[in-house]
Image 1 (cartoon, one colour):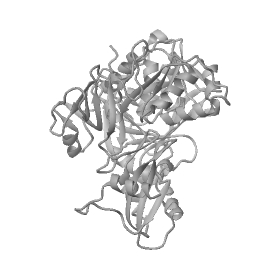
Image 2 (cartoon, rainbow, N blue to C red; image 1 turned 180 degrees about the horizontal axis):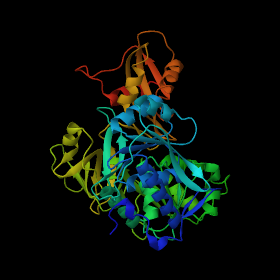
Image 3 (cartoon, rainbow, N blue to C red; image 1 turned 120 degrees about the horizontal axis):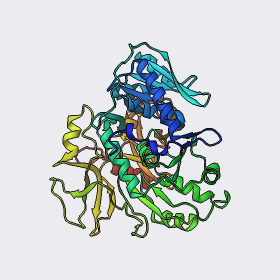
Image 4 (spheres, one colour; image 1 turned 60 degrees about the vertical axis):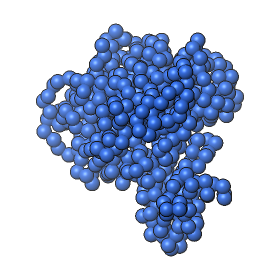
Length: 499
């Protein structure tokens, strides 16, 4: 039984290709294991210890996969971060995670500046003679001489998930959580050594990391890892490296559909197409199946569940547009406000239980108390289970803005808007968007002089681009309830109907 990530790469597949870097390297399972062990040894010699959170600030590449697994194999905790964050964001996430070391690419990077301000040791990670290396370029720690292998209850991965009542919450995930999840995913899609997954999602998210990469490596298949998603190169890469499936958010599916004819996309060849991280419109589902000639399987995932909770099954079992399928090694129930399990067909809060589910948020007893009921984790999503166990999501209890799968806390955006000297009040919210599902909008009341463009520019200096409000509504007042409260859904309705 594969108990930890150190058991991920089977010696049975040593000669098989594990990773293809388009127009670059091809790495076998045996070579991948050697590189992971060498990088892990370098990190140990450099002082990284059991339980140390290590921020990994790398794009999608071989270096990310090797440094991630090397970190976890030496019993440290991988804490991947979006490389497009601004310095203030890096500082916040590094401090909140208690990061002890930072891995960055060669050359200047704003993450280095954030790490320097926090006095953190920094390792540079790159490729030399076809091999991944890490080299400490800042800081000094005594060597780690602990050679022990990880155990299932060791925390392996630390991520942040955006909350609606506070800053993003820290989610520790153990080796046991991750292995349960990727075994569930591999079983759901019957992954085998014959499969090749074309990675289009970022590896700092559970979707790309667990949903498409580690699940494939568990089963002896190969992953094709471009530096970033390129619609114009997608089908060429798929053909060259014989991809059998890919997983993406609906935004990417829509982009591929819109360009399909001009890119001479094939009408068959993939074993299946997976969609996750935001709702897939039934119309898009049908268009994907018709144009690309492969079954489309919509799934449901979240960070706290180490990604996948449910999925539509492979043929010949029915896959249902508008549904996120059945639980995949995860118990799913619908709870009412008091925590009682509701009957089939009744709407309530989707709640889950399984070996892949986090044991709780880091240093957040209030969130843990509100999120767990009788052993079930409350997802914050509304839904209905039908008689056959298929889950239909009907809305979000939480107010997160879901921009193409990126979950954005409106409070985080509000806080930046309110730092602007001319802004007196600010309320951000999600607005429907054809491309991303939702876009960030904000309503502001001014106490000085500023244009919408100036406020957006201010936000761009402090927030990653995907969090910056696309539209800023400048108003004399923000609508409130009879008791004087601001409710985002009412604010959104007011400004969107008056556009």
